[in-house]
Length: 500
Image (cartoon, rainbow, N blue to C red; front, side):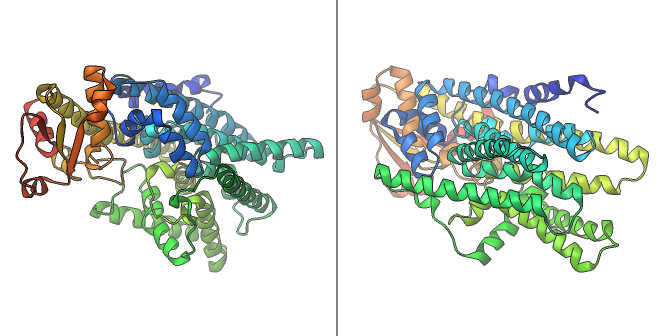
């Protein structure tokens, strides 16, 4: 397919532009973005990321958010992330084409996986949320680390060259981990594809070497991180604690990461009956198909194969599988989702025997990805968030004046967007009002006032008192004066939507 389509490297840039065009024209601030913008000058961003084992992200955020001063400039960071993901997708095409030649993989997989990366839910989060601007660096470093080691073990090279390749892979892996731990999971993807292509039952030499080296890099990272914390006299975040609850973690795997991955670019929420049915059905279908595809093998061999695949996925998601918190946000799942998508497509192609269906299927899956990708980003993320932001800005512009020194803020209900835009909140990434979280109102109001007056000291002095809901505010029996302003997001946003 690549030879017949010399312009295949135009697919990613054009598709990214089609899906994420709003990144260039839309102003809003979502959750952590406003906190990182307002508090960046005190070094808070650097400390937060450093204590979570993400030193390189701390440095990056410290520089990037210091380069902007207004809410409407946050979109420049999103544009930066947009460009970075176009570059990562092109890098994927280049590396995957080398793997496909080496492993004799059908060339249509390159375009299908490229379109998946462009349209997948994690990338929609990375592009739409400036607080994830670092992700493409981590994925690029992890991908290159895996590629370098993959080539080192598959090709016969001299001892000196092998040592240089292993050293390079190690440094790239550490860079990926110090940016965002979960991005390093993509290291295993070429080996996962190799395993599926070989159709072997027990992972052999190449796979075992990769798994050993992969875990070794994590071990080196852990000791370097611990030493750096001790050297700087810094206490690491409790988020980096290790869990020893094996059964609890297995329950987490089958209740969150696996269902969301097997939903194949459809937003997963445990509240939805459709999601609860689709994901288990997809998982069961794949498992049954393994026994059908390899019917000549003994039952327990196929069972071992399924276990090996699941173990591969666990290794890709190992940072979240050993962490204390169980939080399967989409931003942690890029490598995991890509691996599951490849697994399902590879299995589906085996069962497509009729030439016509085999020809139509790639186009059908690509069309599905493009439609869902456009819908997820624009209708489930950007449109609700930008409407919330416009409603807030319009209300502040109408009611804020020089006399006001106290703002009473009623935070948005978690399901506000569900009622207005028919979106279901998933973690803190889709369908969740930005002003639902308690760390948003104060920097948001102070940043807006700063942009309105140009006086940071005046903005820093304004008092912000928050309430979870309207009932709590009513029960507080507060009598508003001329120096007070009430902002009720549950009233402001619906009014703005209905009067547009």
